[in-house]
Length: 184
Image (cartoon, rainbow, N blue to C red; front, side, top):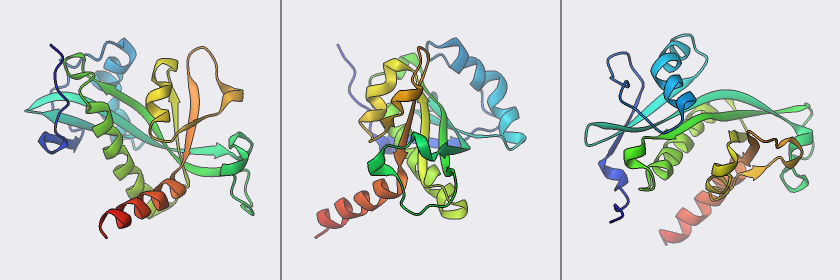
């Protein structure tokens, strides 16, 4: 019997810390497991990235890692280009990793992690700027990111990853419109 989606209110998302046991995490991808268990905390301490972990009923269910990035103007589709922007690269925030433990997959944890990523990205943008969000998606996850509005940079797609972006400013404005229309 399929398990039902989790309630986002029952999830707790925290920055990764040294006192958290991440050794039992298994998302089915050895590279993503190894990153969390071996590199994430070190990278965070050295200011390369920030990793946030999601707990459901005191069990580590997923994580994401966020880093600063840039997006070359030539990789942005015409409708998303920012007229008059004087530099060759747009500032961006990258979703560097996102993984859900096998025990919790297909229960909505990925969507909860994306909501948390958007919140974290907004905090970055609010303080430092960053018009776009980027991700290098594995091909099997492409439709997942498209559901959140990401577009593929088709000219850069290869067998291993599909570079994608989202105009976060337009996404934010649209979100405000939707929220305001629902509260009327």
